[in-house]
Structure formats: C-alpha cells, structure tokens
View 1 (cartoon, rainbow, N blue to C red):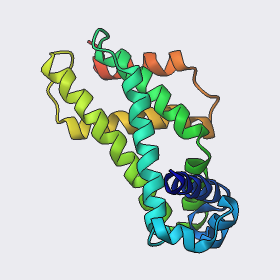
View 2: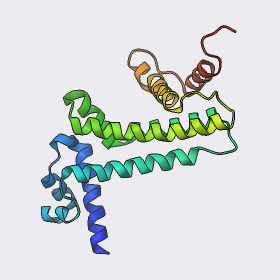
View 3: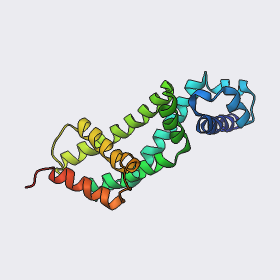
Length: 192
C-alpha cells in the first residue's frame, strides 16, 4: 500500500512541478522536493523525466475522455452532444494548470517535449471526436464526410471561436458560438 501511495505522491508532485516550471525547467530534484521523497524513490517508479511526463499526460487524457463521456448522451442529437462535450473539454483545458503552462512553454520557448505533449492531447480529442462523428453519420444525423477531416475542422473551428477570436475581438457567448457552428455546418455558406 505504501508503494502505491508513494507512486501517486510522485506523480502529483511531478504534475505540480511541470505546471509551475514547465517541462524544460522541471528536474527530478524539483519533483523529489515537492513530493518530499528521495530522488532515488522516483527512479523506482519511473526511468526518467520523459516517462513521468508521459504518465501524467496519460492521466490527463483519461480525465478528458471521462469528462466528454459524461456529456454525451444517446438521447441527444449529435450537435447538442458536440457542444456539451467541447465546452467541457475546452473549459478543462483552460483551467488545467499543466496544460496552460505547456501552451505558454510552446509559445515562448518552443520546447519539443511540451509541443509533443499537447499534440498527444489534441490527438486524443480528435480520436474521440472522430468516433462521435462516425456514430452520427451512421445514425444519419450528418453527411457521411471523412470523419478524420471533419473532426479536425470541428475542433479547429471550436478553438478558433472560443479562444483565437478573443485575442482580437470581444468574446462570443456560448450561445453565439453554438448558433454560428450550427448554421455554418448545417447550412454552409450557400444562401439557399
């Protein structure tokens, strides 16, 4: 039991260290100090910083999947499920200190490991979206477009409207974003 607790203690300390200092500046000494364990204790569980970081990313991805699954219901149409799950995912991403720090680190320093970590998270979101898109197409709720391409466009559109837009314009409300996405995707640009 103590071994499992120490492992969790090390993971929690590492997540805190990565959130405070970023990937590049985090050392095993930082993690050991925050966890209040000897540095050697960390190495009984993880070979190196990269392995520890991957474990944290894995748990973040699992949490994001759990959050999404709480929002998706079979009795709701695809677009309603999409709005609920994307809102929850982007809210989680925006509030999660580690993810915020990774975005800052990529923007400010271009740290490859931080970029790869964020790419893993985006890939997990895209895989999840792709399954939802495929399911909606099979149910006849949306056209049978390439689920991989459509998932990518949906995610980028949602990020653009919830985050990128706010950098140069007044933020759109959730209802404005939902209405824009609904009209854009259901009717397209054609005036008919």
